[in-house]
Image (cartoon, rainbow, N blue to C red; front, side, top):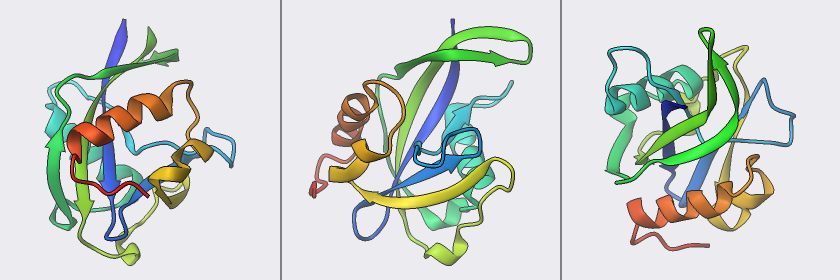
Length: 149
């Protein structure tokens, strides 16, 4: 069983992607912002909540570009509220960040750092096996006109 979750592909004006270094990761590994869906929450509400919680970016500073049609399963051992999961079923949303970096306020204790990364360097930072391949597919689905650097 997979825990339902959301991932936020956020690009800036330079077409770089926002990645976060979670406190639970080694310092060299980053992830796409996101997390699990809480009880009674819908996908869109969850993605905006996760963005706000992790990096402090408010909805008004984000332009929703789109949502992927099919979630992906990320396999890793997960225990949440006493339940064991095989991983996370991630639903991807794409956003353009309209603000500036002074708006980014990291959630102390959860997020250690953030980084804007061009598409060509995503594999240098992503942690999970097959993550670049799966993430690339979602990037191309949500941002079909993105110029890949």
